[in-house]
Image (spheres, helix red, strand yellow):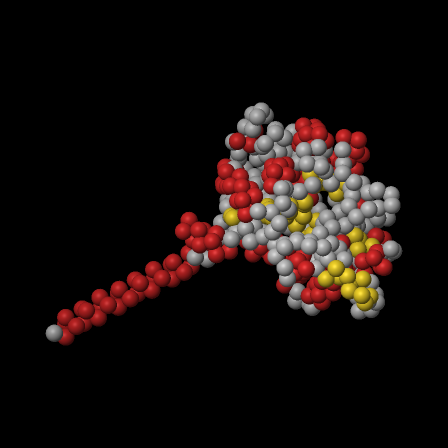
Length: 423
């Protein structure tokens, strides 16, 4: 009897240990790559239309990049893109993604709440249909869309939301780039990756100045309320009767809404181990056109980041004289100036303007409806050279990269770099 009981206890103990082992295995596995069923749960609970794995970007090709770094070749960076649009912008976001796509980068696409669920789903279906994206798992459409009011703080909130997703889902990127549906690249990602591989990883590119001029009375002193913070339908901001004074505890900076910012700086903005990012976010809640000043004021009011700024947004933009609320739409008339500027991006463009086809043909060599070819594409140059792809670390810069190199050298020149930081 005792022997039978002893055997029964041994069986029970072994069974319990086996169950515990399986439970630990499943628990630990849950922190790695997830199964299709887990992906489905994430899809419905978070409403993110995604092709990304929870650990996407963990590829053996990174080892090749590290080995190249050991041979004296600069390590290639990674960019994290936010590509934003609104109602009716789905086709433009699709074309823009095709123009800036590269396997090394990450792409977050956001159609705001004004766009329909059908538009958002159509964009997500396209993203999932691309074999390269399925292979490299580096693009996602946000299903839980934000309401965005152009002149209110909701645009800043939506940008911070996207940055938080990228920080959570992608661990190894270096710079964040925000693009709108009316923006377009002027060079391939191979060109951009090549030039940025030689740059310090702590440089923040954003146009900024403390000499805000007329914006003091039209931006800083008025107090606005954005109904988008508490309504589900887009409407214009409205003004309070009172006006406020210029801040005394920090200095205001303003500039362009287009930025190229480092991961380390954006971690500071989102996590805020210093209270400055939160304080300024609350201040800019009632600030007209807060995207023109939030990141600029944060970076220039903190000692750890104010010396990392490069006073340029890496965009070619044309304004009316005197400037209006939005830049002018670029056309074939501006093509030569765009090219000679050396900027990697330009905006704004009207949808399907002929100049975009010229950029595709002469600067990107991009076949209509397909990705911009690069060193990662192994197919013959024809209708779709990226139908066959290989190592994402194979970068083949073109002569266009020389223009960006010239611009960067000018921006980092001793007469331009330090003297124009946070002034």
